[in-house]
Structure formats: C-alpha cells, structure tokens
Image (cartoon, rainbow, N blue to C red; front, top):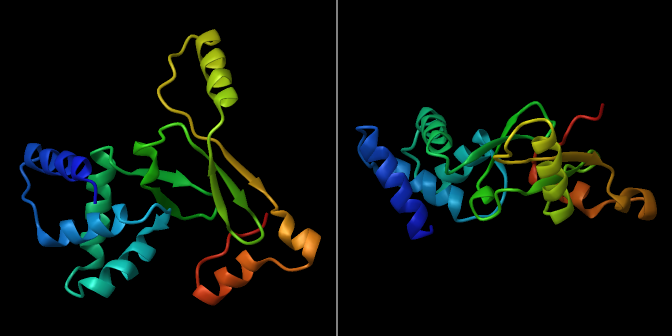
Length: 165
C-alpha cells in the first residue's frame, strides 16, 4: 500500500480519536494492493483469506471510515449493490463503461468530457468539484463472436453479473 494513503488514513483515524488496528491495516492493504472495483462482500472474502479473525462488521465499518476519509469512493455500477472504487485518488475524473452482458467494467478518461463538465456547470452557476459518468453498453465480443470470454470468466469465478433491464 502506498505510504501516502497510509499516512492519510493514520491522520484521519487519529483526528477521529480512534486507534490503528491490525484489522484495519489488513483491510486497507487488501483494498489498495489492487487497482479494481469491489463490493463489501468481495472485500470480506479477500480479507478472510489472509486474516480469519476480521469480521464482516469490521470490514463494513472500515469501508465507511475510508469513504469518510475520502480515500475510497462509493459508486453505482447499476447492479443494485454498492461498489467501491479505490482508483479515484490518482484519477479523480474517471468514468466507467459497464457491459450489461458480462459485467466487465472499463475505466476511461476523456479531456473533452472534462471541458464539457466545466462549461455546463459554469453556465448553470456551479463550480465543478468532481465528475463521474457511467455508460451501460454491450461489449462486442458476444455480438461478433457469439461468445464472450469475460462472461465465461465471470461465471467461472462466481462473480456477480449485472441484471439486464
């Protein structure tokens, strides 16, 4: 885990009058050691592989702390679950393209969207703070090839699939 993230977390915990615990450290390390989105349950499963003493409640409380500390962002990827994004610290204006067939999530940035965001918010009398766009689409693998390796991999790993509308 990046030392700057650890320092921000330690400072936040200290200001809240809390103490640093080994369970919080294990959870934070599990979150920031990978550059991918996750649900609380996926994180709990990941943490339990390295620390069987960490409870589900501790995972949920720590997630709340990290969101409050502005180290983690809750995002809606359209699957009726809260998904967490650890990547926005490096890229605060990134967006998500979500395949409604296989659940694949692709992050993207586009300077044109940043300019549009700035123009629209200023015209309407606002100052932009952050921007997040989610585009739901079909990946072309299924349409072009009749099968999607992402869908197969998702099913094999037991990950959740998004509900079609």
